[in-house]
Image (cartoon, rainbow, N blue to C red; front, top):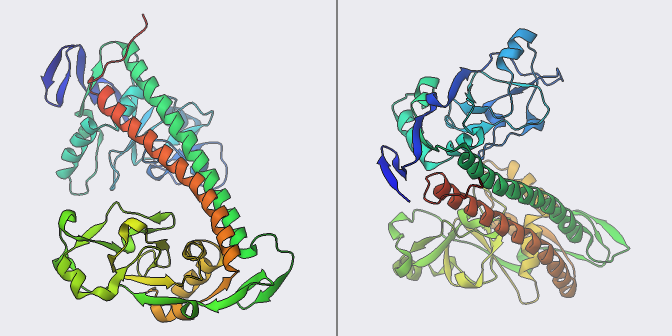
Length: 421
């Protein structure tokens, strides 16, 4: 397989290097106002285009337009639309066959691809590093970081000579996209089911027939209400400047903060590390395995358990809740991330000037307490539901990584597809 060196990198010798102006015709969108009531014509805007280039047609508003203008601006399957203003300028959307009548707004530019070139392949190329490196370079010279048709027309992309190869590449990437879309739908459905079932478990418990009204809501009759400070130890992690203590991971102590807390467990993507000097100086801000840490700022109120691999880590701007041996920490994590507890805490925050969760509030915070045995059962069922959700999240991430790898290989010709002649 032979390659040639071009201004955008190495590509196969039998591929063409084309500017977008060679691929089709650009057209600016129509200027009018969006309307909520149904007019029969959808009015596509930048905000209706998802980052992956799909379009949320259910959210797209309508507009009024005369027949002459409609014919001029009507979107057709295979059209590619480019955002031309704002932080997302250069972003593209692809028009699939959907049976809807639609036009595109003035802040979008349409590219109508000419015959003999695969529109879907061009769309995928507009999501490649080859395209975006040129867009970013073009935008740097613009005061408002926008893009216009002239700028877009000069962007270069590599295109296989053979239309069959173009279509095969687009077909492979479309197949992966379809798998990702199905996975996204499963995740959304599983998340709704997960929340519904966990909410029910936390509010009604397991196999209870009798309930009682309490100051914090209706709960099973044999459950108790306790203040968090009476059944756990509530402290606060380090508060204040800390940047001078940051260090490399191989010689430091892990530092958990608000950015590492999510409703789906600890997020370690942006985990920072601090020096041993800091660790020795601020021993009270240490956290241990199964401590519950609650965000004080930002997504305040969200909570995550400290996993075993972060035992004796340091903490910053979090509230630390340390349960006794007679209390299930995982039950407490579910309480703070689902159900009425989360709603009540959000209500308290909205009345706070800074929206900060502090130890005094949490110590007095009342929570429903089943028996330790029932806490364990609730955790077991809720964790099983949660695990199914996380498995699908992992599968979704793998599919997206597969697509990323395929795009890097197929859109540059690093790997060639077999064409059935």
